[in-house]
Image (cartoon, rainbow, N blue to C red; front, side, top):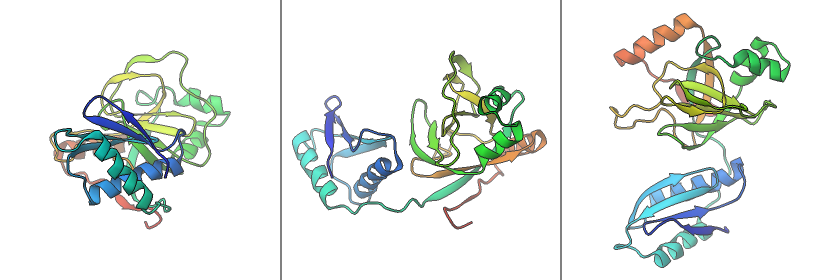
Amino acid sequence: MDAKFLISGDTAVSVQLGDEISLEVNQKVRGLMVNLTKDPINGITEMVPTYASLMVHYRPQVIRFGELKQEIEKRLGSMEKITDCGGIVKEIPICYGGELGPDLEDCARFENVSVQEFIRMHSAHEYYTYMLGFAPGHAYAARFEEPFHFKRRESPRVKIAGQSIVVQLNLSNLIPFPQPCGWNIVGGTPLTICDYSKEDPFLVHAGEWIKYVPINQREYDKIKEDVRKGTYRVKTYEKGVK
């Protein structure tokens, strides 16, 4: 498997496995990370998957760059290709429109469909989480059916609310904290996307799938209160087995 090794300072290397955003390339990234997780190389301290590369942080006093590169190349040459697109699916409740989704009607107009049809298009399919980026827990996820035709907004907002769900083309991201954003806001989730009080702070991880479940405002308020009490449990299941 061909790879480019991009030195990132003196304690990290980016292993680039492609130059496009695609499920096939991302599966290579996932495959390498799984390999290095199950059979670790001494000296690696952390791995960060992205669309098309795996950032590998390491201790140069334990393993030098040349040795690390050689070992990763060996893994790439021998590891099995991930051909299945299975994995965990997490159901994320979303309340569309209103204050939570100020761009919903504009987005439906961009697509020349009704608001209800837009909601159906957005929530009918599962989204693959390519990576977490920009902010902790910020999931970049894509569906592969019925992509929208519009892209980012012409003028980004300086700050949007945390727990917003934003869209463009076939992508739909989870916004963990108040932050700048140029994407279209179609709704919000009552779930906490990043919670540092938990051992595992992230709601969704790279390689997992998201299924948006439309809810109304009353349901949103009820789930938000259950989340506050710690009694809400995210519904999860294996892709293709519900």
